[in-house]
Image 1 (cartoon, helix red, strand yellow):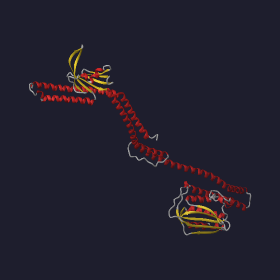
Image 2 (tube, helix red, strand yellow):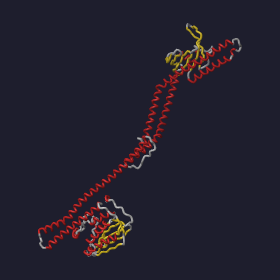
Image 3 (tube, one colour):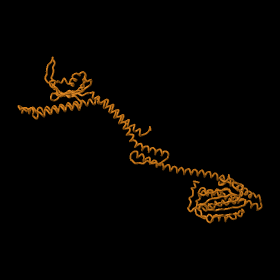
Image 4 (cartoon, helix red, strand yellow):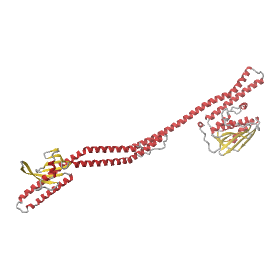
Amino acid sequence: MEKSLRVKLSVTLMTTVLVTMLISVLVNSLFLVDYYVSGKQKTLISVFNQINKMYNALNTSLDQEEENGDAEKGSVYSWFSERSITALSDFVDMELSMEQLSQSNNIGILLYRIGNKRIINDQTVYDMQVLFSSSGNSSDSDYDVQNFAIYKDYVQSQDDVTVLKETETYTLKKIYVNRMNAYYIYLLGRMDDGNYAMLRASVESIHESAQISSRFFIYVTMCVCIISFLAMLFISKRFTEKILVLAKIAQKMSHLDFEQKYPVTTEDEIGILGDSINTLSETLEKTLGELKSANVQLKRELEQKMQIDEMRKEFLSNVSHELKTPIALIQGYAEGLQENINDDPESREFYCEVIMDEAGKMNMLVKKLLDLNQIEFGTENVSMERFDIVSTIANILSNAEILFRQKEAILKFNADEPIYVWGDVYLIEEAFSNYMSNALNHIDGDRIIEVNVRKEGDQARVSVYNTGEPIPEEDIDQIWVKFYKVDKARTREYGGSGVGLSIVKATMDRLGQGYGVRNIKDGVEFWFTVDASNEVPELPDVTEQ
């Protein structure tokens, strides 16, 4: 993953370590040799001071021995006194210490004494006796200082000499030794007892040590970089896993999914970020919920407003159409009365009856439209009560007996006794009355009207059947629409308005019940259902309709 934060952190750390190591290697290559040389100079000076102190201590011990020896002069065992043996032991220990200094500091040591002065071939020559050499024992009469390599190399290599430091007691020089084809650092010093010391250390060994150190440092750098990279990958996993979880939660939030929450277990920056994301998620979820609710409510209101506007337009169009004919009739007959077209009382009475009949039709139309409007928009509260629907329908049929006689209709009423239902008595009576009026107005043939009330489970089914012409199949779905008329001429004849079945539809929708119509043998059956359960039913929301 090229853009992984985990890899970026690891690469950044490895790069930082690598750059740091490379700078260190560069500094080593430039300054390590000089630093080693400086350190070796300090080592030579330190060894010289230690040797000087050891010889001072030895000389002090020998002086005391000489004083004591004068008191014991003439004794055969004077040379084997305890102090002489101690002095000899101190000398041996001192030589051992100088051997250790030579080995531990990797330097050569030559201590010598300048003796008698002689003139040989017009040249002044001094007798030089070796006191100690790290390459062998002290010289005797057969061994002179000139025979030791450390001294011979110094004498024979005076062509390339650099004085590094010079004091009253010692001088530091860097000399190119021809025999060894290498540079050495020499310290030439005069000790407090008058003897001389010559110390030297190889510069080439310093270069070799510096190169070995640099190579070792490079290897260590490579190992540290690899280990650091692997360690950072492992350590960063703990942090990047949490960041990835936060990223997934944020991605889900971008898709409006607010279910997942970050488990806050720490109080560090990631914990604070996780808590903030949780708070943001809850706030967004709540705000979006409120916006959705407001949007749904606004959508309902807009739909209702559009529906009201459409219904208003439709209402005005239909009402103007339905009222046009009766108003024209009323106007015509009223003008006839005004102009005394017919003077006989019978004609005037006929004109008045027509005017009253048309006015009654208009009054009935307006009343039904108001009832339909109240039912559709819920402006009239529904009063749910439990009543016997069989008894209610029986009363309606009893009151309409005269209508059946006028239409010469045969009534058949079939019902279980009794059936208790939940509903608004007025609305159910209105729905049944519209079915009954529709049956009376369209009865034909055997002129039979059959009313059935049966209980089916938790519902009561009320049906009204009349013999006569069936409804055309293409009109069955349209008869519930306001002002829709299958046979306009016949509807006009009996004074129908095309609103009755719309009232039935609105009533059943308001109560949340079913309704319908079907063509059966020799006639048509209209039906609706009513809740016959023992519990009070919940009414549907008017806005949902």
